[in-house]
Amino acid sequence: MPVRINLPPLTRALLILLLLLSLLNASFSVRSLIRVQAVPALAIIPARSLKYPWTTLTAALVETNLVSFAISAITIFYGGRYLERAWTGQEFAKFVMFVTMIPNLLTFAIYALWYSVTGTAFLVAFKQLVPEHTVSLFRASIRIRVKHFPAVFVLLNSLSGPLLGTDTAFFLSWLGFLTSWIYLRFYRVAPLLATTATGEESVIKGDASDTFAFSHFFPDSVQVLLDPLADSVYKTMVAFRLCVPFSEEAIDQSNEQASARAEGGLPSLMTGGRGGRAGGRREEAERRRALALKALDQRLNAAAAAAAPAPAETPSAPAAETSTMEPTTA
Image (cartoon, rainbow, N blue to C red; front, top):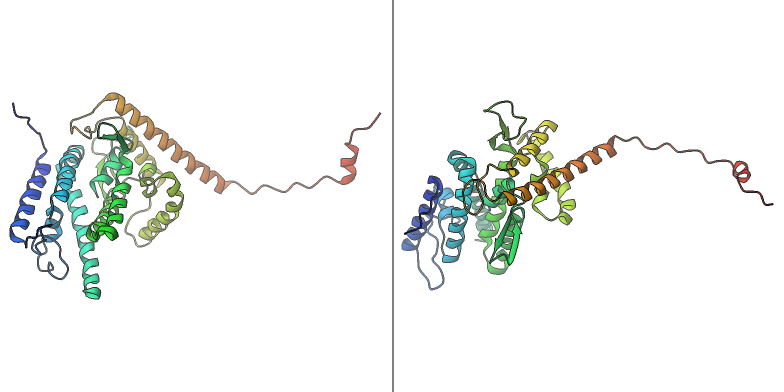
């Protein structure tokens, strides 16, 4: 009996488009023994794709070799069906449009400038939804938490750029990482899952939770260096009115939202169904609570240190008085 794979409609459409556009690109491109070259009408090529504005969308669904095609197909298959079921198709479509068009437009601008002079978003969404979920690969020989996926992906593309000449992947990975995080952090409107919601239509804009801060994508040893840089970028965005500063209420709501996501109601990461193993959900919820409590403790300690007055200096006791305190000898 054939195995039936149940995919949400938008995820199924993205997979079909990936296959059709990649085959169409291969059929019209110049072939070589190594790879298929990109066609300007489907993929972004500096100084040649300007008259094809739809490439800002189609370029993300055109692959020129089997390895990148397999990676994209797997990403859409698992990531798409998870996010579409967790967010609904409409929210997933908005996310795909945002993280596809902006990185492609920025990359095209970079390459256009470069040409005139010289001639990973699903992972971020996973970090927001299930950061403490552990994925086992190759029969559990490799175990990695979801929150580390974006940093690993960006690092690999950063290394492959100068070493293998895949500079396009370098720009797209970093721009996709930043634009998806900015969208989810400041702009996406989501239903409020926390228990403090005041009604069925209660929503929350962005994600101000401590565990979704930019530095939390990276190891603890690097977070100390990234926090001042991230704060500077945040203040710059606020100064240019690109985002609204987070209030204490928004931070508390987002922290409750993160705890509510960890306690259940989201589809399983690998199966795409609702829920999952209860033990795994409890373990992830406990890790999330521990991280949230740690971040809250750090914020309270920083606030207490800033508000505490400087200790007053106590006068030293006179020498005569100290001498009288010495014990007498018999």
